[in-house]
Amino acid sequence: MSPHGIALILTVSANAFAVLGLLARKAHKTFPLLVAYLVVLLVQNTLGTLLPPYTKMYEWLYNVTEPIIILASIFVVRELYRAAFAGYPGISSLARWSTYAAALLAILLCAVMILATRANIVHDFVTGYVVLWERCVAFSLAVFISLMIFLLSRYPIDVPFSLAANIVIFTIFFCGTFALSFASGSRNIKLEWFAFYAIVTLTTACYLAWGISVRPILAERTMRVRGKLGQEDEQHLLTQLSALNRVLGKSSRGSVRGKINREG
Image (tube, rainbow, N blue to C red; front, top):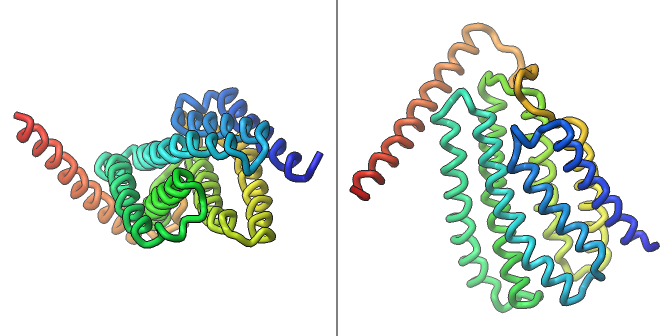
């Protein structure tokens, strides 16, 4: 068997391990969207292993499954936001707004990129625009993932260990594959193969980490991303966090009332 085939089999095996590990630990009760996301990836990876690369069938598989995976990733980010800021309903409303903003920003970025690069798309017509849309959504989500990590690292927020592990693993998985995808689509064969094996290594490690470390967050020990602080500094940051939560909460309620008034 070729190294390419062995790499794909390792990826599928690690992906299946992640899904089975999460289901065995009943983590799907806490992270249902993450499990669904990994299941769709498992379907794509399994079928991709059975099909020869650079064929019309392989391209059709990509065009069908990749938009589903990207949409699922949007809802995974939303799920992580809600879990991380469960005690701050105003901030957790960012989950909903990040979903809307990621979709809108992706459409705008995609429109700009289509106008700027339509003469240079080297893929098939449909595949080229799927790739553009995927990268635009990925960029938008990377912004909101960075914002979530910034808030967790700045403020003294207690988060369950599994949730923190999940955020770290998803960030490495999503942002790493997003960055390497640019190299995998190049015309340089050596660079493309390097990107392929780098993606295989990265995704396999993340799948194994998911299968081992992520558990239900109910009654689990918590941790803080932010290090130890003095009592005065901690109280100051908690005051800032509460104020931010109130502002976002009012904004969210105001938008809901405005929608109800317009419908009425």
